[in-house]
Amino acid sequence: MFVFLFSILSLIEQYRLFDAPFVDILENDVNGFDAKISIPFIKGVIKYQFSYTIIFMWLWLLFYSIYFYVLKEFFKIFIEDELFITKSLNKLKIFFRLNFIPIILNTGIIIMGWIENENVSFEEEYFYLFIHSCIALIIYTYIDIFKKGQKLQEENDLTI
Image 1: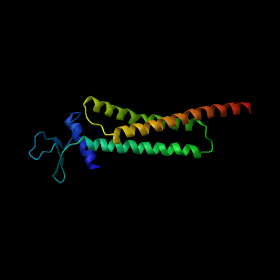
Image 2 (image 1 turned 90 degrees about the vertical axis):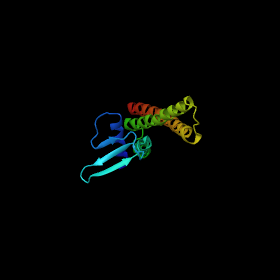
Image 3 (image 1 turned 180 degrees about the horizontal axis):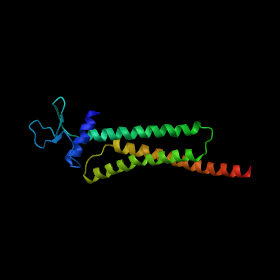
Image 4 (image 1 turned 30 degrees about the vertical axis):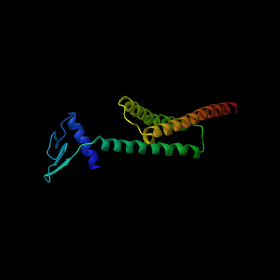
């Protein structure tokens, strides 16, 4: 957690978004460190090499934490007493839209790899793109079924 916090602070300091307290950016240090955090009360100094990898790792963890929470809500739809309600349809739409974030990001990564003539491994970007596209297609089918079920339920309620 501290590494993530230090990375965010040094990123803010590097791009001069605001002057982060106790953070210094070291351009050409002898030890090769890019950032230095001073701890005022114990007079400690933490030097480390800044990396975007840590920030992306935490953002990936945050995204998939939210993703699996929404997936849990998706599965709870099918054990509720009333199935075709607006609340359930809204949960499906949220999960459907959430699946487009990795699709868009991975498509961008693949295109950037093609532009820069880098080898893009099949195991990573293409796999995530394929999996999330399949899930989005299945969820779209569920949304359509729920809309039709909701319409049939409303027609049934009107005839009673």
